Image (cartoon, rainbow, N blue to C red; front, side, top):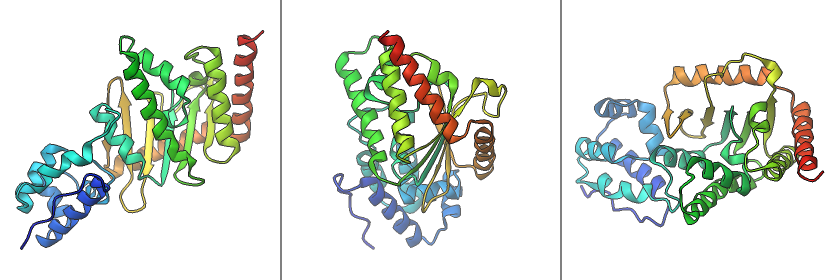
Length: 281
């Protein structure tokens, strides 16, 4: 039987790669769980590869070619699915691709405004802080990539974005007062338009369920949900159902501890005004 055709990198290579994986798996009469066992991953991971919500890494491509006897097809084509002109770090590139497939994103940000809510000036300040010796053209490229990600919010309804922002992130002056004023007005605008649900976790809330770090949960139409953990210069996606369920409960507790949407918007607007007045006395 003829093997699958090589992919055209110009036509959604990850989606096509996933479709070819499903075709090759079914041809071998393997379930997602059975194939996952041979690769030492979960069946849901195989499902995410097939749905195009996870990037196929070279090691998995090699093992798939061996198990499914596809004559090097996945190794030849996984590179096309991984290309990005913005040159994200490997751990983050998969997340940026995965979030474009999400129907819902729920995020807690303890230290900074999350990427999907950032302005260009705020993103520039953050990237300068991350890499103070990087050439300006590199910073420009990173900012362009960040702004490209935010364009998904131009769709009127998808994905659902629900962000719980720690008050500390709003009070940490990043890039100067004018940059902060613009950033907070931008968030307020998204909330007013109903494009994002935004709540502030006030400092007065004290101890809470996510004091150990940031949290992002992603849901998909045709694949299991994922959680993303991020630290300094590293991050990882996790599809373990028990872990995802536990952290969804963590997020629900954060929502319960946060200010209402109305009070959160009022606080964001007030802080934006404070930054504006202090910048221009």
